[in-house]
Each structure stands twice: as C-alpha cells, then as structure tokens.
Image (cartoon, rainbow, N blue to C red; front, side, top):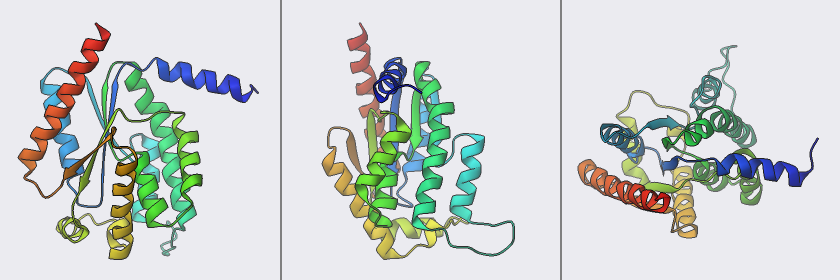
Length: 235
C-alpha cells in the first residue's frame, strides 16, 4: 500500500482534473430545495449546458438502495427496527462514497454542471446537530469519503420548521425523517445556519418563504454570474 503522502497526491491529481462546476442544495424538510434544484437543471439545460441533476442519499443504483433502507426502514422480516444514529451516519457515508466515485467525479471531469440535492452539509446538520454526534468525527468522515471534494457554491433554503413540515405533510410520500420531533428539526435548522455562518463565501442563504419564481430568478442570476466568471478565468 502507498504512503499517506502518495494517496494525498493521487486524490489531488484526480480532483485537479475537475472541469465542471459542483452546486449543492441544502435545507430542512419541505424547504423547497428539491423543486429549485430541478428548476435550475431545466433552465441550464435549455441554455445549452451539460447538467447532471442528482441527490443524496442516492444517485447510483447501490446508493438508491441504501436510501430506501435509510429513509423507509422497511425490513424484510416485517419487524420494525430503529436505526441508531451511528448506523444512520454509516449508511449516509456509504451511499456518498458510491455517489462520488461513480457519478459526481466522472461528471465533473467531463465539464458537467453537477446539481446535488444534499451533500456533506446535511451530514453535519442532521447527524451532527440533529443526532448530537461528534462534529469533529463527522467532519473527518466527510473528508475521508469526499477526498477533498467541496461544492463551488451551496444554496441553503431556510424557513421556520413548522412551515417546512406542513409542506411535507401534504406529500403522500412521508419518510422516516419527516416523522422526527420538532425539537430534532429545530436542531437541524440551527445546524444549517451555523454551518452557513462558518462558510459565508460558499453558502448562500435563500428565504424559503419567498415565491418560487423569485427564488428561481435569484439562483439563476447567481449561477450565471459564476459561469461567466469561470469562463473569463479560462480565457
């Protein structure tokens, strides 16, 4: 096996080949991030860009199976078994490892704009703040799985949890996290805002209570400016 220095150089070379742009969408349940992610994907495709719209947990066949286990918790035996916070974290990270290796990195190496519904910030917000797991350990796990991959820009959709959960209740497809307590979701929201305060240059907070059309315009304008800036740097 190679030394840590050799592995680090290998990871750096792989990420240095990245020619695409990586954008993530974060927020509490019912914040509207998924809708806006899809909307931006449609707009950018119309403009002629190559776009990959994906999600976490999920994104690959293996990762989608993990997502089902993680969110639905339907055991083959028919018995309900609670998933521990540590198991939940391990499942999220396992899905991410597959997602990055087989989906995200190949797309970024091929000059694709990758739009991802949730990424590492969700791990810190849900498993760190929400489940109260050790933040330093989670950050280390994230670094190990991502191999240094970070979003170029993150849109964080924020609104009161009561409004977000009310939106989710109108959806027939309720998952395990939707049924968590308000205290849990409050911790998650505080976590997202704390992370945004830590990375103000990367994370843009979006008011989830605004009209979807207005939100879409703000996001589109921000991304177009980013694309134009990147184009100028390349020339």
